[in-house]
Length: 208
Ligand code: GRF
Image 1 (cartoon, rainbow, N blue to C red):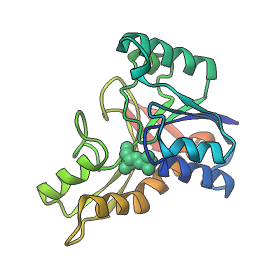
Image 2 (cartoon, helix red, strand yellow):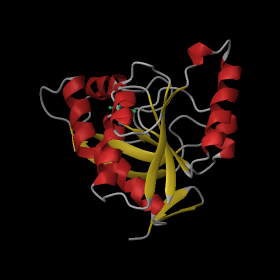
Image 3 (cartoon, rainbow, N blue to C red):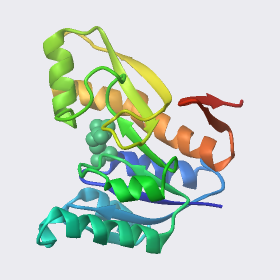
Image 4 (spheres, rainbow, N blue to C red):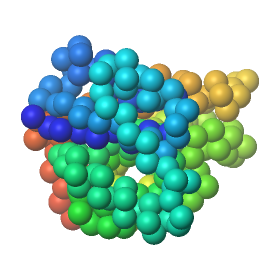
C-alpha cells in the first residue's frame, strides 16, 4: 500500500481528482494518509475533511523564520513517513533537507509543458497569463519528480491542451486542469503505486 501525503495551497481540485480516482479504483494500492497546507483557508483542507483525511496546517507565517519552518515541515513529514509526497498546487518551496530525505519520492503537477513557462515566478494563473501573452497554440500540464531545482526534476508524463481563440487565463487554466492535470496526476500515482515507473539517467520510463 502506497502511503501518500498531498501538499496543497488552494482550491484542491487536483487533490479531489486523486481522492475520486482512489474511490473509483482508478488508483489502486494507495492511501492518502494526510493533507498538508500552508493556507488555513484552503478549500483543499475542506475537501480532505469531507473525506475523513487529517488536514495539517504548516505555514511559514507561524514560524520566526524560514529555517525554523523548514525544520518543522521536514520533521512533520518524517513523522508521517509517507512513501510518496504529492505536491498539488503547493506554493511553498520544498526544503532541501526534505528533498534529500525523500529524494525520488516527491512528485509535482505543473500547469504547462515543461520546460515552457516554469521555474521561479511561474505558478497558478501566472503560467497561463504568460502562455497567452506569448501566443502559444498548444500548452498543457506536466507531472514530474521533484529535485532541488524549481520544476526541473525528471518528467513523468505530459499532456497537451489546445489554446483557443478568446481564452482568458481563467478559461485556459480550467481547460488545462480538466483535460490534463486531473488525468495526469492520478495516473502517475497509480503507476508509482503499482511499480510501473523506472528512472534511468534522469529519464522516466513507464512499463505498460
Ligand atoms: C493548478 O493549476 C496546479 O497546476 C497549479 O496550481 C493550481 C492548483 O489547483 N500548481 P488546485 O488547488 O489543485 O485546484
